[in-house]
Image 1 (cartoon, rainbow, N blue to C red):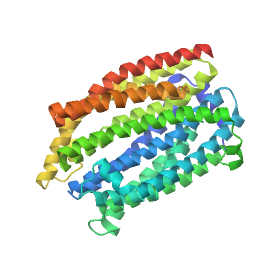
Image 2: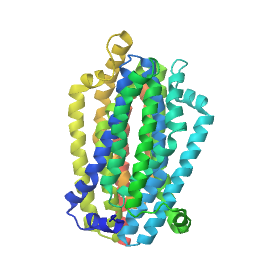
Image 3: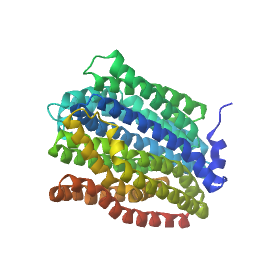
Image 4: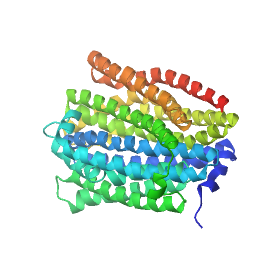
Length: 457
């Protein structure tokens, strides 16, 4: 017999807080890490060629891939957080309507993104910093992963959010992790066995496309087993009030992720202004530093439905306990990351490039220097993550957007430009910890303001 969303309510309402967070967060962290690994594997295998141009192309394409995450948040986070809040007041009929509406919304957004990317691919890649040497490789990757593959990729992420926010964190993890593991297995097969030399980027993209299709099929099956609706009839029956609530949080979450990607675009363009080796080095570091970030984002995503449920139910003490426990865990993870990356920056970055030529050695040296500086951002970066996800869980889209805009547009990007101008590559790296520290002060202030709203419920 299929489990229902109602059956998972005990996790949010009754489990001891550490057990509830552990139950929801561990599968999410695992899926985050496995999917991170398959992104790193792409970079790792491309690095086996010793070709910095291919590495630079993959780094540029990653920005467009990350936009899939931003768009999936529109209906995944927006719909998912509303589902958890509806469960907090036992409105299970509305849960199924929100689920169906979110699925069809994700499909529409994915098809639109594919079409627009296909039509404007060349100017888009040049804007992102592609050189005449790297644009051909970047086109290969973007065509398969975005133009042909945005639908299964974006829909998979949306489905995983919906499942997680109804308590089916394990099933969401299996779908995303299974796709990641399949990608890891297919990468070397396509890159070095089936396709000829020079087609490694195309092979990595093809492996990603097929893996996303497999993950999407499984997650659609899991959504149906969880008694969540994908019927058009239910999507049409959703109330205007709930549509507004989806977009209130979903748009803010998409903007948050989109602004994060915009900051990465700015960083890539500044790095490309130095050299292709600097751009490749920054691409490596962005992959490496995502390991602790993936753990902490998984922790925040696991916390979010518990926060949403208890906020809606008016359980102030449990909500505060969830935040206190989750934040203490995240800060501990961030501290460990600083120690490891400060001491092992060179071995970690060396794993991504062959060292048989001068360009590869220069890339490794630059990447190690970037990593030792940027890893200092980990604790304050987690405070920004935790505050944003918690505010989204409480339906506070306005403060989420405010935080995101200040964090990226007012603080990070201007600091990045200024410090790069004053101190060069090291200034570019130092902009991240400086900006995250300033933004974390605002994040905590806004979170405390959001928490006061529970007294009015």
